[in-house]
Length: 429
Image (cartoon, rainbow, N blue to C red):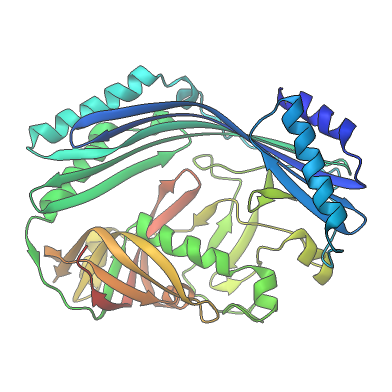
């Protein structure tokens, strides 16, 4: 069935007092390659349908990945059977009502028209470039077309469409291994020559590596590294968890808890990144308009992501982080290296995990190359390191910000110079 047919069938056949339904569709092409060879091309559409419903305050939900009549009847029956057996939900609220939703342009025709043949050609050119420098490259070239549809018994009706293009490459030459990636809604902005040149430059910079002990030291966090830390911090901004005392932001609304140079918003004004028309909650129907929202302004916490239930309970507006815009500055990386006696340049982080949610402390490791600089110049590469940091406190130690860059299809982030970043151990990978 098509989306409209699914909508009509569920609306006509649900007998519960209330319901919300979320339909997610994705049509993907993924060309994978490893050690200078193309290994597979995966293609095809996928669909998931999640139905949440209630009899009074007794709720149930179910999901399916099939849209035929038999599967939809089983979806409805399963959700209704669960609801009838469930105890009353003390946090039950009615489904979202009809509302005016913002509109955005999240589709790139260049991405939608990108052919599998062109994707394979991009991969082959990547392989040829690696062979030319006697190296091996692995990664994936991918494009996706997403569709979201949500509707409720109370009249909410939202649709969204997104495109995304990505190309990642991990280069290995001798003992050196490093990675770069491009992620955007628009294939038209992709430049393989520029991306591979950055990959080759990273690999060259890592040829001379020296042992480096963990310590507090100034760091230049490139956009991807800063983005990875801030996404995790964003989860801790949750209004309910904070109100209940489980995050470092308890009682901090309208307080100066970030650095004065730090500004963070979800925006509808940057055409380069996607901007939903509505927000769902962890894959479940929620129905929150994706409005322009300032989360942090000059270090002051102005707003916090809030579910519909908690917003109703606290007389707040429901909201959510739908993209990330961190305001930058105009300091170049070369200028940053001259602002401190010595430091490290960080390309990426990975394996980021919470250590203490109440304090906001995270741990994780560097990846894709760490460079040591001194007296304004890069001297050599160093081993990977493990860190323990509290991101919102880290923003108080920002010394300078670089120009904003597209860090992913949903994030614009600057480079940041930060003093006394807390590394706690070496890592072997």
